[in-house]
Image (tube, rainbow, N blue to C red; front, side, top):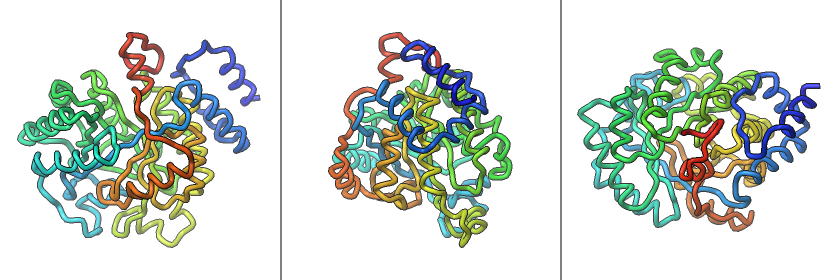
Length: 355
């Protein structure tokens, strides 16, 4: 019955429309579909809004590592973690731009910079702004993740020309306090509001494989799919269990230490169906996935990856491995504009697309 209702709403909605009124029951029904049916529907939605066979290449650099006062249970950069990650100072602007040049040579179109902070301090803003301007001058899109932002800080980043700000919601609202206690789910949403109100594109996703239930994955997707405006980018991470972190130690040597590949692909597919215009990015955890699993994710609507050898402090597949995979799968790097940004450029935003 629920599946029939979803189909009715899909077929009666105007072409190209974006819904922000998904119910948890509808999203749960999508997760429950036979796997091949779910992939078929996700592929249909993907091809209606995105160029098939194209995947966006992004690079992520840690510009300030370790020493974060937050207690995120998955993160090796928390001061609460006994992971061996040493705290560093903010990188020099010139060194960051050297990494940008290398990423551009390797085909990346977006350069993302992450700092292990609860929130940026005003003394660091001039260097952050210089990094944003430098990356843009080199012809690449910019993205940053610096922790929570005030409205004033978001405005400063927008004025500097920041294209995207990443601030993941991590998991469902109900499970959030089991993963992080030093801030609330509402704090996360407030920063997303500050970013959106400043005119910066939103990048927000989460992590699967933290010992959560499918109901939590439903809640995670629901929280993003019912925002007033969908995130332009939705990264889906598979937990990389790191020794010395709360979750890494808790899940070690248990069946929960690695999420089932099919369940991960289901999460990607449901994100694609419920947020049709968003870029869905395969993020952390990809280095442990087989090419077959990644291929299923691309079929399910994932169309962005982080390339390079490292994601902040975790290992990644590497440029050469990704190039070889693209050749085998017949994929090519995305060159054109992302759907939401293309629509905004011609003033045609509605529904889940930002004004």
